[in-house]
Length: 243
Image (tube, rainbow, N blue to C red; front, top):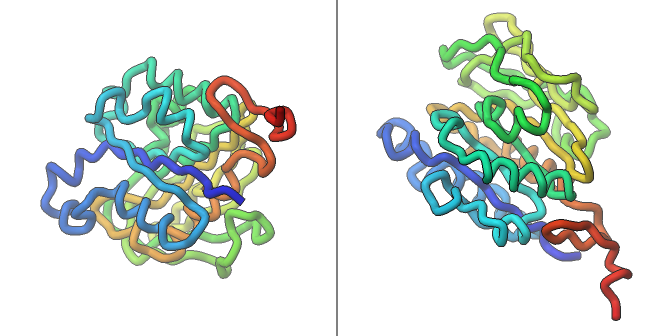
């Protein structure tokens, strides 16, 4: 089976502006996530960041991406609309998309869900988060116990203004009593979309083994169907490519 081609996209702003964040992610959040994917066979991983030409998401780069991971926070508005449309087209054609943490406010997430998705409760007090697995049979939850516990995190709480997920895999609980839909699956066109809540930049969340496990599982789930050749503009069965 061919490796899943993953692009990990990150604004890469916090790490360059904050010594606190740089100490946790010296090579950037994108590299921590990429290394978590590379920890197991089956992934071919590249990274891209906001300040690269075309945000590192050229047509050619996306054409060779099976799953795109998206981490954004400070600079949602700086992402060019033509790049957003390019990513949207690829998702509709079959590319998987995993949106992480504050990426809920990104243009691409809102474009694919068809609504503003920034409305939620939040509190950055470094509270304990317990991410309960509510669909143990789902591929994204493979290998997990009853819950993932993160000692310190930013709190996100309901109401979270998103369309009802096609599948809800995780629900978070925080010390303040709030709950949050933290693992949401959608299908858009031929593509799969997964939103995963953990990942505030001032905590070492992307060094947590179970968080990285979820990301690897989600990349496998979101990848185009085995036996299909995905290229920019179409999804064709392998048999149709034989001469």
